[in-house]
Image 1: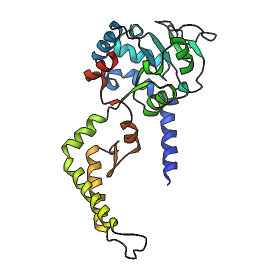
Image 2: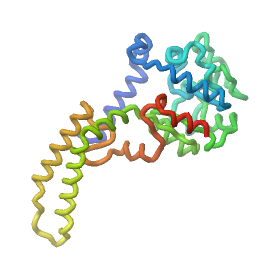
Image 3: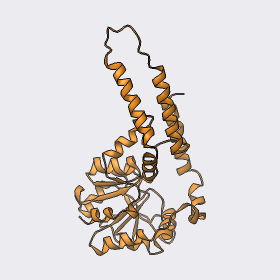
Image 4: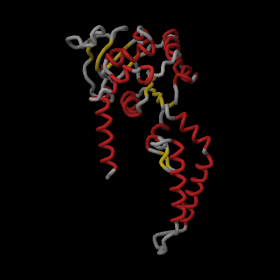
Length: 274
C-alpha cells in the first residue's frame, strides 16, 4: 500500500466524519464529556475588548453547532465578546476566492435572503465570505491582525501566506511531547549517538568503495530505540518525530508562532496587547 493510498483513505474518512456523520450531534448531546469549559477564555476576551482590541470569530462550523459550542463555553451572550462573527467560512477557501457574505437568522439558524453588503455589524452572525471582502470592510492591514487557530494548513499557513496575518498556532499535543522529551531524554541522546555512528561509517566511503558498510546492527538498534520512543507517545506515536527525524508537521510548526494552551499562557495576552 502506497503512502498516497493511505493518505486518501484517511482524508476520505476524516471528511466523512466532519461532513456526513453525526459526530457534531453526539458532541452537542454530551458537551460536558467532550468540551473543556474554562472561565479564562471569557476573562481574556473581556480584557481584549476593554483594551480597545477588536476581536472576530471565524469558523467552518454551521451556526447551530457554533451557537451550542460557544454558549457552553462563554454563555448565551457569546456574540458580545466578538466584533464580528463568521460561520460556514469554508477555510482554507475563505483565504482564496471565498464566497459571498450572507446574514444568518439567529432564531432559526437559516440564511436570510440576498447577499450582505456594507459593514459587518456587531451582534450579527454572517455566513461565508472571503478574506478579500473582510479586509475591504474592516480596513485592516495584514500586520494588524493576529489570528489564533489550531489547524496549521486551514488556519495558519493560508492566512499568513495570502494575507500576511500574524499567526498563533495552538498545539494541544505539545504538552505531552515536551513531557516525553523530558522524561525520556536518554533515549533521544542514544538515538543521536547512533545517527552519529552511521554518519562516521559513511564518512569515509566514496563512489569507488566496493565493500558495503556493516550497519545492520546499528540500524537494528535505531529501530528498537525508535519503537521504544513511539510507545511513550501512545498508540499513534509522536506528532513531531518519526524515529530520529522531525516530521514535516514539526518543521512547519517551527516556522510559526505556536503554543500548547493559549488560555494558560500570560504571554499570549502580552502579545495581543502589542
